[in-house]
Image (cartoon, rainbow, N blue to C red):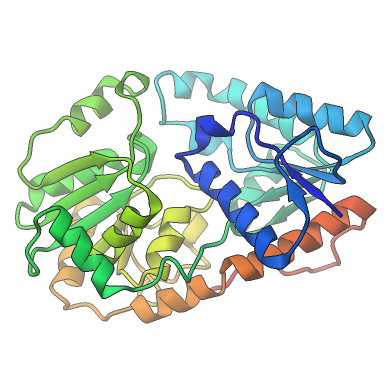
Length: 347
């Protein structure tokens, strides 16, 4: 069995969670010694698509004509498209129709969580849909004191400075407005947001938020994965104030790095991230601020060991084995066994 990881338009999403998911797929297949290519001119048995651009749909249709099997990774939903870029709310219903067209081209749909699977089933998609975590490279994103020191030295941060970290695009859905307001309310903490989105793509209120001038608010932009790992290891808390996700790879990275995590209390995290066991949760600015202070002042119990354990259960080796199993089922037209458990842990 040989897999084509379709690379069309991949450069467009290389700095996003989708780009990281493709990197995870490559790494998992290489670790397992499974034959794969990113050159569509080579022969293959199963094509794995990760993007929803027109070229991906054309690739799916071409593969079908050639008698190949199509696995589509459903990273996107209408819900997480809303509150993102200029015009996204108006375009959301059209976006939903488009992604359904893409996803219906698949012999098998993979989506990162049971929550996302439920959304897709709610759209009326009838083909096989399986939830499988994007996974995390838990060996790379691991606690490392020297990495943390590099981060602090790079940004001139004293050892006792309280650092709050977040990662993502500059979009409302990711919680950037709350992040900025929390920095305003908490001048005794330094707030760092890593990631980048061209400012012309985002609404004025988000642009204004990103351009807010506060001495403790920093938007350094996109950094490579080594610098990001250093930031996890050198920060006091990972704040994930996102309003909607299909999973959140950066969240898994933070858990793997054994940094305390504070997330918005969302349905997607209701079952597998337990409040007070693996992460802390908040709903409002007041509860986010209270949670931040409780974590950085160490008046709340340390959950980082539990978080690391959860991340180890979603390591690329385990995800890769399940992914290869799914490729085989798609290739041979085998249905999922009844009551099959998706790769997930409830911490």
